[in-house]
Image 1 (cartoon, one colour):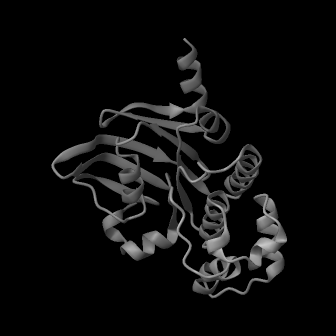
Image 2 (tube, helix red, strand yellow):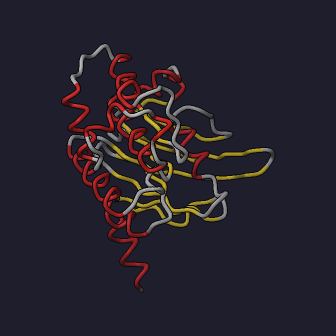
Length: 226
């Protein structure tokens, strides 16, 4: 059974059709890369998936059940979004990372936080830094860790690695691959074909409000070479 399905979804904003007839399925552990030009509706699609909006037409399914069967808050506990522009709400990095842990009534020691920071190429000292003093790339990575600590079943990334240098991006890619092996399903938006090839096993391409491609990464890049 697919962990997530999108069936004939249509998105309209201010009488403009952003997307229509969008359908795809994801299995647990899939990584779907979404490629689209600006203004194509990719961010709107992510907002639908994490239950921040509803489609004009069509239906979304989580674990075989239509979204209407779930309370939106319940879906947002299962589907985490890391936005393109990082938003940190607490004073320090430690407080930021503790927030999802406390929501889940779990106890975590700083050693775990230090290990996670190391996994995304940030030093231990980052844990006690003020969030406002972090660079854009550092903030993006902290937002990613905060979302992962909430233990979602589906992770949405809206160009969430756009500010990262090559080394940091490689560290994040390694962490995401590890999470996929543990069963996390990932949907990410990118303009970088190298990211599509390296991270995804499925690709969705949006053009002029519709799907121009939806299938495996291997087939996509094979067809692109022809």
